[in-house]
Length: 202
Image (cartoon, rainbow, N blue to C red):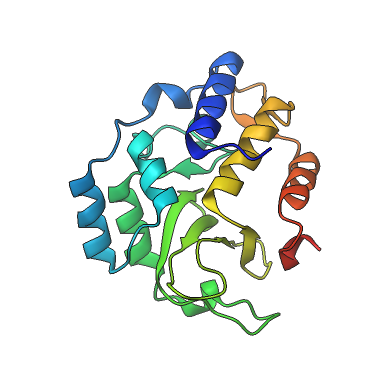
């Protein structure tokens, strides 16, 4: 059963605390409506209700860019960005069309994309906020692995619920350095189960 965003974040934080993981200690306070509006204006896009709900829970994490990303990920090494960090990330990368082009399907999304989860090495999850398009509200994944970027999750709610399910079923664990790790095959299986209509998982 799909969880709400609030339920998923609660599960993720509870399970990370049970693991003794560092990330819950640096979660920011909720973003204000003014901060969200300023972000929308700066990036020329409009948040959907899911993004509003997420950032009303927490404005990302306090990333000092010194602490190893292995200690502060929502999933391994992928950091939940604050609005300010997301603005910087967007402005650095959004004009690199090759980074967004799915050459297999000859498709490139329009620029109303919001980055919220990134690993510091060019791999990022974006919410598609392009209004009236077939992929609106889906989660677009860009990467430096040589894979074509693609839509991996039907919505932010779906993505976070999938992550929460992974925490509940023991997919995530800490390694010997207390960095977050996971069973990638099991997580992919949960993702495919929860997103059967997306081409990536077929």
